[in-house]
Image (cartoon, rainbow, N blue to C red):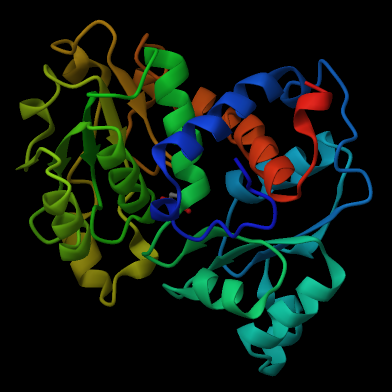
Length: 313
Ligand code: ASP
């Protein structure tokens, strides 16, 4: 399988076999991710992380992944300190970054920004979130978490809860889970449903899904409860946000009817969707999930930059 120089714009561009190949490599990369072993397979390589929107986990885990493999990082976490503030276009910023670095990680508020960047760049571009569009590398770490925690991905019952309209993580995850034959349950306020393009994709693939308004309806049946934040920054009108803010709150008592093996996931940050009393239950996996961003992004960087990861694992 050849990943060298590939862009990672949409999870739809990757086959199930390719996804599993990346996850296998992530598993092998774990000792290096934990700092128990050293690697320098990316020595001499430079990664540019261009973040036009806030980020904690995605940016820091990409950077950690690069450093753990012996590479270096340049970039910014706030475009107001760059020439973007002077009116530079995204296309020109990308042209510069590709001449300085070997790969680019881009987060941007505009849907389609990563695709545009990939079209302008001869170096691989990784989509770290394009507005309400997609977040493919998050999906890879989500799948890695499901696979390591539950043993496999096939035929899982997965509930996607919260802001399904603006949440890019659930868009990418729904596309990916469709490849694995999962049964999906969508739980959202009526005003924040899965977008029509995701729904029609699922219909075309004969993916089974149903729609709910109440978390209690799905808790007893699901293997994964994937909770998301209402994406305040995407609402055109704050009043509209206030109407739906806080509608879904999960606490430990709501999980009493859950299967023993149910795992609760969340791409983070959480605002108030998951009460801290869930953290101490055997169901919580969101912090492990966040850590898994390191081995998964290590595997991805090594593959895309054409490094011989096998040689050091
Ligand atoms: N961190 C995730 C994202 O950037 C989820 C979120 O912000 O709610 O999409």
